[in-house]
Image 1 (tube, rainbow, N blue to C red):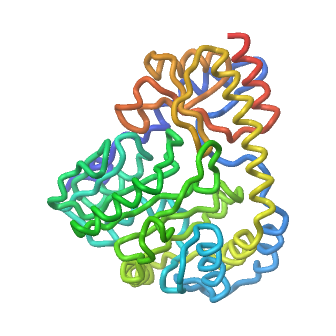
Image 2 (image 1 turned 60 degrees about the vertical axis):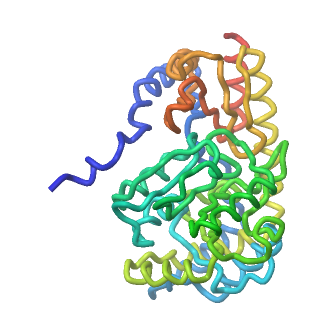
Length: 366
């Protein structure tokens, strides 16, 4: 019997370790801009909510508390512009990566079924298809896909890694096409609240979905907006039939968001002030890094939203990684996200102000 690892690609970040070692040898230390992991504090009101719910000896429910479901539906209406969202249109999950990786399996996909995702994409979309033993296909334009056997179509706007935002008219066309062909649309919208030069729109907005959530599921995370990557706080929203199937499967699998994290999520979704403050931190870092990269001969493409700058010097991404590592700056090679990224690097905004300032100095010296 073949091992599970035989079905999976090499874990990409393992390939970056030698360059991380080089960057760490810089006299002033490493500036790690390779992974989009938050470095700023968890908001105080969220920590309080977590602490106050710490005495939770019983099992939580997979569906979540009434307070959590109300927070999820309210946020979808307030921030996404969704209409008529009920508790059956939302479901908490244990971090969005877990959901992405196991969704095809939980939906019963397998050999002969096809999963599609953008040509430049978060690698876990492909991993999820492989875990389910389903086929996978990368696309440039979803409207040009062959619908035969296609069961699940991933959208990602704003994009990881490029920061590209799909306009409402494109989303509307994709939703119509998918419904015509009976394809489930999964829209990864984890960076939706981090638009800089564009205003990202959810597939659940009535201008896109026509007021119906049939065939649509949006994925959202609190990791970036609220610095809760360590909490594994995320949720999905959309088609109640699809979410009902997921709820049934996840009950059997014991996939429960811990009760203190549920309480922390309620607090985080009920407060927009900390989101605005965090956005301004990222905005300042983005402005500083973009200017320094461009001055060092890089071209920034897309990057109108999300937590990354998609940069190129028209050379192999690994040459760029190596050159920056010599200066103590670590970035992610673009081919982590598919062969189409072979001449780009992804530069994360998730470093402290002090480390970003160090990177800017080093780039100006290059």
